[in-house]
Length: 329
Image (spheres, rainbow, N blue to C red):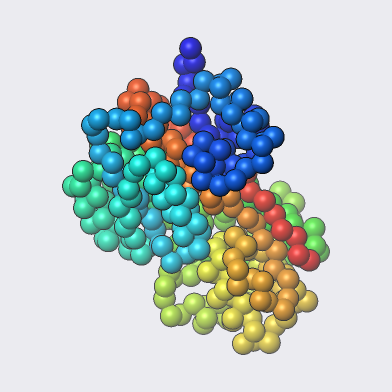
């Protein structure tokens, strides 16, 4: 008898397939070729993976709360889609709330969700420095996704943002960039902060003559174009890491207005290979995140904590899924 509850991630790693593929095999939501399906099923049996579904329960809430920082971001659209797909197959429904990167709205959303009959909560917190008492003391399972609090006792699912920022900076340096900049939002956002730390660490270790060039934009403010133009004129970067795809979109617009060519004068690295990048006439390299896998992993862990109360005793568990890189230069 196993002592540790096996996760989709464990099955995927042993089978050498994606978490998404494992989920499709279990839930029969998409065709998977016979050899792969049989391999996954054999490993499921070997590792004693419990495929019991919540619909077999006679009690307990069938509603799961999902609170994201900003649903307009393509990243969250993909994550929420994976969460909803898995939840639906497990006979759950989700209650989705969007905080719109507004701390006060997030507080209201947390209270509203916890006032409902939800059996668990997945949250992407806005401010990593503020750990709400309502979340800390919640009597239901809570999984943090994409972003987390600096000090927490929950399960977190995301990527190693520090490493990704380091790798992005290393890549630009390998392409000959000597004046590398970083554009993001306030570093109270966990992902932005960690990516900026990775950026700074690489410069300190390998380009000590390159002073950090960091621009912090105001989220959803109309002064982004002005701030970007001033940043480029004053710091003259030859390479830039964009902390989010939205930042990249704003940077590209500003550079086009300034008549600055990509990648001739400034090479750009961003996060997430969004569809609009396909329409660019110039190359932008991308750090990719396994958004579907992040969503599937988060909901899988949450549902299993709901089914197995003993699993809720595991605290401060952090699961980092691997990023990819698309080199377009």
